[in-house]
Amino acid sequence: MSAPQSLLVKACRTQVVERTPVWFMRQAGRYMPEYRAVRKQYSLIEICKKPELAAAVTITAAEKLGVDAAIIFADLLLPLEVMGLQFRFSAGEGPVIDRPIREEKDVAALRTDNASELGYVAEAVSLVCRHFGARLPVIGFCGAPFTLASYMIEGGGSRNYVQTKKMMYRAPAAWNELLGKLVEVVSEYAIQQVEAGADVIQVFDSWVGCLGVEDYRRFVLPQSTELIQRIRKAGAPVIYFGTETTALLAWMKLTGAEVIGLDWRVPLDEGWKSVGQCGMQGNLDPVLLFAHWGEIKQGAAEVLRRAGGRAGHIFNLGHGILPETPVENVKALSEFVREQAIERIADPALKA
Ligand code: CP3
Image (cartoon, rainbow, N blue to C red; front, side, top):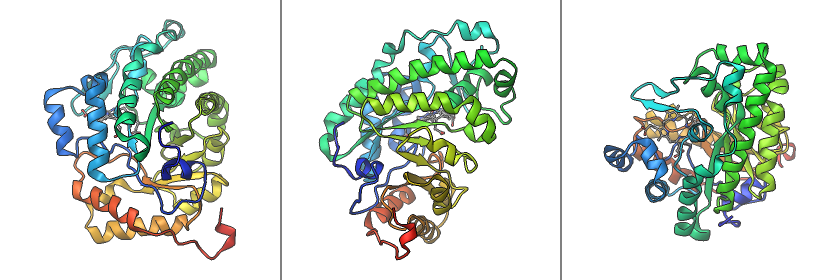
């Protein structure tokens, strides 16, 4: 940990802070001209695998926006490669796995002894930590077992997750073996990032909201809990994020994550109420950043009003910044949130 006294780390521990920390998912991305310039020369994977480049992209985005954390530039799917599953990015289509996992034997063939080959991400983390020192915390990240399994099985993004759920329901032994293998590799990968100096780890379970509560409890919660507990034991607080999770929130909290990340569909105070005592990250609609400033400002003020000054709020969007987003709106939003003094609300029932 390189910035233990930062607003972000304090908020993760639900300690009282002077103002609400703010950062954005996908804060380094195609909406930013500096990033597009780097992408003219290098592919996404090349940037991820060159620690100096990944660190530079991470640092540029955090400094340009003036946010309260730098999230390491990497991709969710990198661990698939060290498990023996090749993937590529096709323009406009997102990630593609040409030979997805469909049968028990595909699961059995996956390797778990190769996580050290992901060391380039930890190297980038340590470069960013060295750059910022105690000035700015660094967020490492990894995918949650369900979301990574869904890419491995579907071969890319999906609408109904039919293949994924088919394995879950029809071959529960293979499903459990797959998630167990993911926990092994991904926990080692996340811990490498913590040991390199990451202050906080965000676990992305972006697509877990496609599950009903019973299926989440039965097929996903034990493995997500195991992953999150291993990361916490390594010394970093965990932010556990998913989308369309309104029905799952209370169960997601049982993983032991310090902070739950909300998407924009649920009002922040309602989401917080259903989770209970916990840190809460979110949750402005990323598409609101395409509106006029007056609307954006009102939306941001509403998120802060709903947070109500409770300890543990981290301001973010409800999902990542989209490619065409106007940069000046992202900058203005970061500035606006940093200018707001925390107003503690009168209703003691809402206080943490
Ligand atoms: O937040 C940050 O600034 C760090 C960078 C980051 C990237 N991917 C870089 C990236 C993070 C946190 C991720 C996580 C990630 N990757 C997730 C979870 C977050 C989420 O959105 O829920 C997922 C599902 C992936 C897999 C992935 N990688 C997808 C679906 C895509 C989009 C494909 C597309 O064409 O839009 C990517 C590509 C990707 N990863 C980009 C970036 C900046 C954009 C593509 C590029 O630069 O070529």
